[in-house]
Length: 282
Image (cartoon, rainbow, N blue to C red; front, top):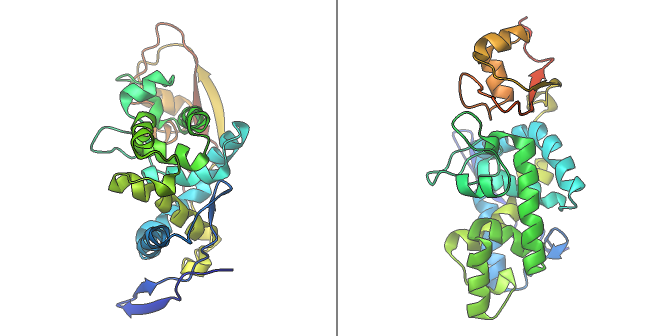
């Protein structure tokens, strides 16, 4: 197996900086081989491996969160015949939290408001389904299937999540190539798939890269019960207490509820998650 460069580590005040890393060069994304025989491809991969291996606190948190979030994402990807590797796209988009970008993209999958509405997510002052991980994951699957059909490649579908379908097509037409690794793209899109590859490698082999996190330190996916609300709720704090929890817990497990109330004159059905464990004081 071909490998990258051997690790040389320097410790400073309990912080270990790895100036070089030992990793496999025969990588693939969603079954599509990464051409690391190309000089620039090898360098671009090396950059992202070195950067992400040395983000000690951030990478540790990603591994802890993945234990809670991946079990939600993985079955939805599988149901849609989307390769499992795309869960690492969510990792680099948001760090597996409901992030908010300076441009206004929100949620684990980082949808802009108009894009979210176009693909069927509800975005209002009271409801923002970009924060609904199951629905947002399904929306991401819909986008990725469309992109794969357009470009014929999962690697290009992933790149288009950052560069846009129209943006990538413009570069394909101009540069006369539809191979991600042969295209001259913006710095962010050029790094995008390599960041996914780096996180995939590190998160699948954490101990190898110095992240031996004990199981008890991982964030658990808590059991919940589902309740359906098909009417208005004038006070979500009182509603939470009626469910045996509090407002904080309700919002933590249903972050798509963006207001203190839920107006629902159309009697639309909303499914809420109510945790059944994890909140008993000892």
